[in-house]
Image (cartoon, rainbow, N blue to C red):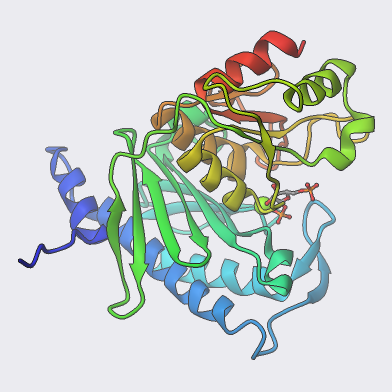
Length: 320
Ligand code: AHM
Ligand code: MG
C-alpha cells in the first residue's frame, strides 16, 4: 500500500494553521529557506569539480578565513530570504553588520550560512544554521524569544531539522524529487548517551575541574552503564546532530586563550540550544541555559555544554 510521505511544506503549513492570525508568511519564509539550502547542497556536492573550494582571500568579522563557499551560501540565503518580503533584518555570521531588508517584514533571521565550511575541502558534513525572531522586539533578544530555529546538515543524506517550539522534527531530502520529507518525527534526545564530544587538544588550557571531568569519563560508565566514547567532527552541525539522535554531551568550553569559547550565541548556540531543549535535552552556558542570556552584541561568543539530561547533570556535578 502506498503511504504518502509528508513534505516539509505540508508540515509547516499544518503547524501554521494552528495560529488563527497566521497569514502564510511564515510558511513562505521557512519553505524558501529550505529552497535556498537545496541550492547550497547542490553546490557543495560539486565541490571538487568547480572552483568553489578554498579561501576567498578575505577574513570575516572574527578574522576567520572566508571560504568561497561561505560567500556563495550567504548570498543565496540573503537573496532568497529577501525576496519573500517577510524579513525585516538578516544578521549573518559572515557579515559585520545586519542587513535591513524590508521595513514591513515581520521577522529577524540570524544565520550561519555554512558552518564548518573548511570541512568541505575534505568531504566532511557541514551545515546551515538559522534562528528566527519577531522583528518588533529588536535585534538583541534572548534565545528564549526565538519563534523557530533549525539546521540543515549536508551529509551522506541532507536533513532539515527544526523546531517552532512544539517539539523537533527532521526531514530528509529525497534527491529524486527534490523535496524534504518527514523522516524523523518528534525527535527526542536519549536520556543518556555514551559519547562525549569536545576538542581535547585544548585541554591544557581548560580549568582543572573540566580537565578532571573529561578524564573521569574515560574510566567511568554513563547512566546506562556503558563506557564513554569520544567523537568530535569539528563541524558543529554534525556533532550536534549526532548528539541529538544518539545522546551524549557536546562541549565548546572557555579556555585560557578564549574566555568565551568560540561559538556564537546568536548564530550557533541559541538555535542549537532551542532544538536540544525542545528535544528534551539540557544546555548550559556559564551555569545557565544560554536561552536566558540577554545578548550584548550580535557577534557575541559564549561557552556551551549541551546534550542528554543525565550527561549534562553529571557535568554540572563535577565541573565548577
Ligand atoms: P565556523 O563558523 O568558522 O565554520 O567555525 C565553527 C566551527 C564549528 O562547526 C565547530 O564546532 C568548531 O568550529 C570547531 O572548532 P575547533 O576547530 O576550535 O574545535
Ligand atoms: Mg559557524
